[in-house]
Length: 145
Image 1 (cartoon, rainbow, N blue to C red):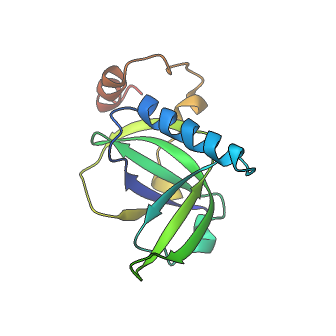
Image 2: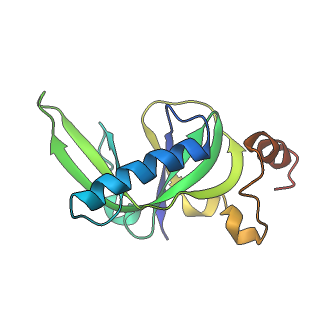
């Protein structure tokens, strides 16, 4: 069973903001002759890398709501110029909306077991991409999404 990561998406006001940032990073990767992807650097290195790379995703919390995910492609460790070990999460180019769920802020990242991970909204068969984020949040709070 896959294991996932949960992380705050600092600086993004919406899923569209995240998608724009990811698209820009993918263009940079393609220009460098690489497969399209984005990266996220974090200080702590996960210990359960094999489980994460076995179909895991990075789930993003945007404005207090678990909102979207990106597939984890690879996890690389490196030592920064200051001598501190860091982790680079290599993420797929697609940002997938998930059923919104409220989450409190925290530092760093957390593991998220597959059995409690929110479902993809596209899996419901409904086309809700054009729905405003506030409306999605309200519907999720009412248990309708």
